[in-house]
Length: 430
Image (cartoon, one colour):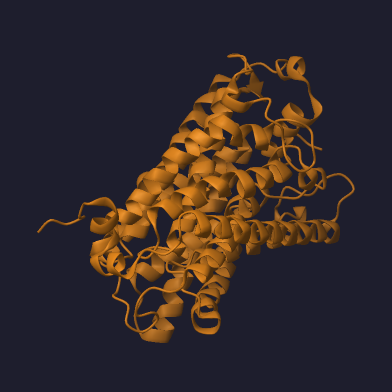
């Protein structure tokens, strides 16, 4: 395997699956790589706070703005603590094919000078923690305006440990999908497929908002949503390019492919709206941008800039249809289209990378002895197993949460708005 192929998977495999603690100290620390990963960590956290919080908050009614922001902040706090106490260890320690062990719980046995590749393990931990923060926060968009705050907290904590950490281990931490050479550069499976599948099941179990689908108020502040989308776009540079774990050509390739996919997807979504309705909306265009970002994520470091454009076009076209399918055919109130945009986009990109990574298309190629057909089968297996596990585990977690805290807020709380009813504050005191 070449040094440029699957950089995150290669480094983590060397650190977790193949090398012992002494061997992990062999590489020399690279200050440039470390500085870049520190910056990328900040960018990924910036995606959640304030990016995702603003993006979601602009799409709800004024009486629920703070509740959405509160969900994002609270999940960031909870996920960070759980990642330290157990999540990181379950994802990135041990050599088991299904889940790690607890040898790194609390980082108690991590020497200060421990390295992952050429960066301190503490920096690698922080970078992965930012991923662990945003992934359950994405699910917030499925249940806005009608969920109990206690349910959000209990569900998010259990989900992080039961769904996210094992899948992260499978793909990036030396687990069985990494052993099969599944290609997921920055989280099409680990982040977007898991969150998207879990989101639509949560929305289905929770039930729709009052007045769904005909009598819902429009987004209260599309400008706020645009600002949040812009922060997500910028933060995604750290999300995808940071996944190279180095300041190198792979990071540059990932950044360019990421940007081109977002740009192409935004244009295509706007064009679809213009052809259907005679105008392009702000909310629609930035939704397209996010769809392009989600679609390119698993492929970003493996493909050419032109393939990034192709993924953006495909992501916008397919995710737009998925939004309509969920709302009109399934009639599920996945309120802010988490499954249709993130889930479908991440799955699409995960499948398409098997084609677009071909050297004939300017891609990075495949592992030793693997051709396009073999890679496509591996990607399909990865998608199927990750989606099945996310679905089964999510339904179990929802059953537990329903029994312990309940899922849905009372009708009085929903009518008053969750800002005041659940948190005693209002977003706007006018």
